[in-house]
Length: 373
Ligand code: MRU
Image (cartoon, rainbow, N blue to C red; front, top):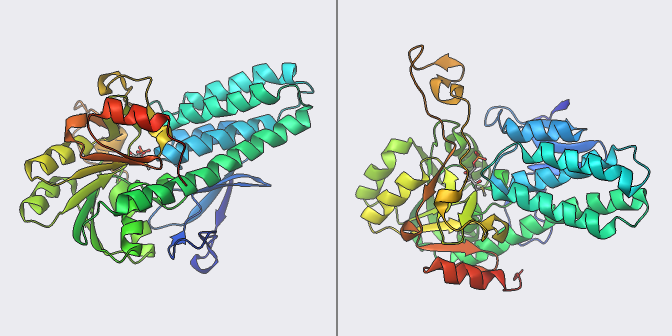
């Protein structure tokens, strides 16, 4: 694995291609001739370091270790990892390639269980493989690389549309609380929840973001605050246990979060702590919005109780910056996600439109709507 350190002035950041946004777009991940390149999110906010993976196994590792994280980014990383694995294959026919393809998909599919975008991406790459298996292997390889790149571009476009749909729901001015990081860093650019905030700000709304720090991995304080600061969007970091106090003081007008998987009935799996925020929002009559691409909606999972919840290493809880914070031997829980029941969710904002309760009907309707871009 190759590591690049860029001085800040030479950061490979670009403006959105369609000039739709004035915000800087962070290159969370991209396909390059050398391999798949990721900004190393474990090092942010103090170090801007890039990692280039040259094998699919390295891509699986960076997903597992959260160098890249966030459901949509995990999905596209998986697709690029598969394309990379296929590119590296020595197989001369599709029949020879098939068992290797299956093994690559298996290894990538075993990285993180909750974000359904991972399995959505694997399925889409598999469908491409099946559709084009009669082609010569070099063409098949190229088609898979292009499919992964297409998914990258589609993700940014979807986020911009989610942003447009969601911005209308944001207050003209006031505090908006978000949890974890559902921003450019969790996607291929622009973000879902932060895309809604970016679009609202671009419409002239005076939003002040309250970013929950998001224990134990601190995606809110490390990542959300980092990318909003880059864009000059006013942001206050709070520790997770301050959210209720901020709401009771009238500082929060709306909540917007992302999702890792949304069940057919509208139950939402998202970063641990989201459920507590939703309950607090309901108690204070504050709208609670979920912003996610349609690839996060899993109509095959009937309700939230069926969503697999990833358990992560206890060390994420017991240590902060390598300093031990709990006594030796104490029991520790570390579920990475929780499920917010649909009755706490005011609306689900997707690129296909905004769904409201009853979600079983509204999400099923969106499934047959052509994506609006
Ligand atoms: O464990 P993470 O950092 O991958 O969890 C990320 C989240 O929970 C995000 O809110 C979710 O993936 C939506 S990202 C647009």
